[in-house]
Length: 176
Image (cartoon, rainbow, N blue to C red; front, side, top):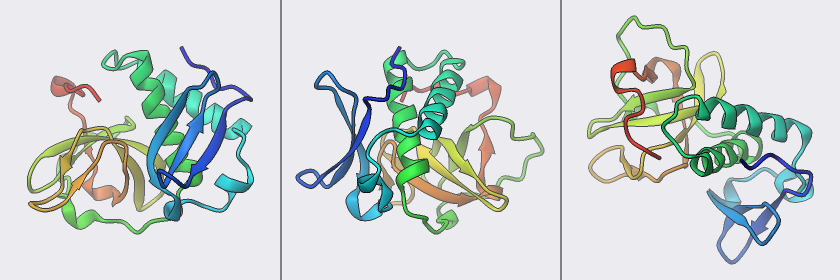
């Protein structure tokens, strides 16, 4: 298991135009987040903060309870979630891609479903507000409509009335 370390650093890679996480031992994770999407502090405060480390660990532990993803996949998802929560500039909700949830099951998990016109995808809520939530996509090539897809781990903000619980009968049946 990869536990957060004071050696972990955020790097803005100009060549790839992406935020990277340097995990030491020549191991880096490239996030899908472009440099223009990032807050200024991702460059000025490159070391993992105590809050970031705690969030990463909580997400990692939470994902492991699903017994769906390997530890390496949980680490990858948790690192992307941490990057999204702490380093992305605020974004507007793009709820028009998704069907409203009309069921009555109470949402009690951070792994959720979003239903586009084309398909259903799983996402992880990384920041929940009263009206909307910032999510990262867990589904490979999540088609939002005929022309637009969301790559795995990209962030999207949606109104909370679009969030569908992942039903226990099909609880995250696909691997990230």
